[in-house]
Amino acid sequence: MTAVAVLAAARARGWRIATAESCTGGLVAAALTEVPGSSDVVDRGFVTYSNAAKREMLGVRSDTLDAHGAVSEEVAREMAEGALAHSQADLAVATTGIAGPGGSEFKPEGRVCFALALKTGNTRCETVEFGAIGRHNVREGAVTKALSLLLDAAR
Image 1 (cartoon, rainbow, N blue to C red):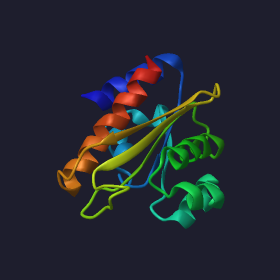
Image 2 (image 1 turned 30 degrees about the vertical axis):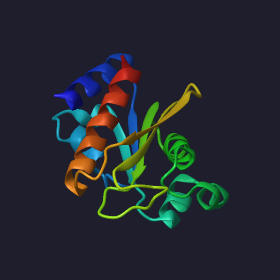
Image 3 (image 1 turned 30 degrees about the horizontal axis):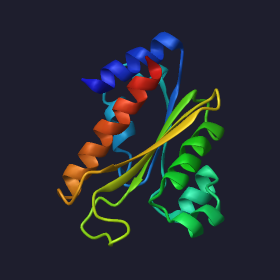
């Protein structure tokens, strides 16, 4: 199970993890905390579904939201970095996307933007186009991808 591996890798480094989630609605944090003993690694999770929550809880700038929209790597970056700034974590992952149904020509259903931030100052962003595979499947795929990003960083 990927969550078990994430927790083991972070634990080996003495790292704590925070999540900043929009389209996944807390599912990444839920996957991690499903594992017994995860409390020594998981610091906290932020579910920031609305733009107001992104601004208030994570410090995402209104200018960034206005210029790029909530589903963007720029917003994902500010979410992950905000999660680090508002927690005791060493590593944070952020998810923001359009799980569906819906979307537009410019931001299609199934697009999810991810960011992974480290206390060392390194943040990387990535967008995955899952396609119109249904809300449940997009969210499930986003959780798997977020856990994979955490695992790669903690190894």
